[in-house]
Length: 172
Image (cartoon, rainbow, N blue to C red; front, side, top):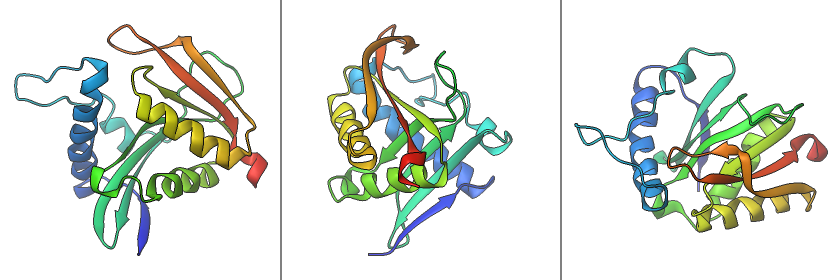
């Protein structure tokens, strides 16, 4: 199995991220009460910024030359000080889930962006909560902090999110 992780560039890559993000938000809509716009899209207000700002990165995951997922990393956090990175969005297409690719992808991003991280998740996203707890626990050997219903992480539906803090430098 050939696995590629590429930094997304403007143009075709931007359209790939836009399209995969729609599938991701569709999945999120089951627990986050998201609605589509008049054209049937969820949209993503910050998409363009990932292709112009120096503090945002979008990545595309391919397996055997086929699209398998995407991730968006940025430097925007809750109010905690001394953080370096935030996992803004992370999605593996259903066909590729359960094959260790999400773990591989996330760990590669943690290695690429060394520092203090946060990963937030909607409290109704049980699968996401289990995923992030497991892979971050594995990555840090259990050295992370998990906070439920963090008052600094609020979703558009008003729900307080869970958040994990950890340091990717410990595995350097």
